[in-house]
Image 1 (spheres, rainbow, N blue to C red):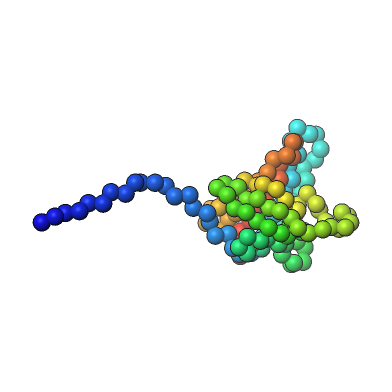
Image 2 (cartoon, one colour):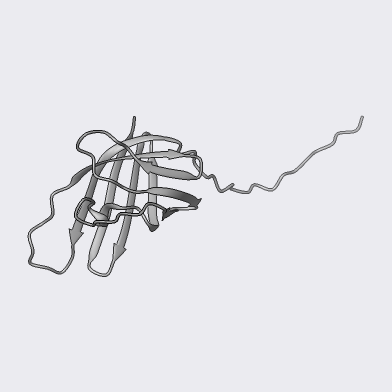
Length: 127
């Protein structure tokens, strides 16, 4: 009797989560090393479909832009393709553009980015 044993290398696969869906939550700006008062969070809605993203259109949500999305381990790379001709109608600090660290826990998605003395944070729940 011949017994064949197959050994496989125990390698942890890097898993890219499927983030497709609609997320609602809050966008918050935290100013570091300043005496200015904190900025109130704003309601946001993010819709992810494959390799694209866009803002939700619900009443009261501020825009997060729209365009291309690339997912890497621990980082979401947003390329905003929308043009905003007048910056008075859009909170441009909330527009997703460039790289954000992300974590997924259950139906929660957390995005964060630090730029000089400002921390940008999005806390979402999947709808």
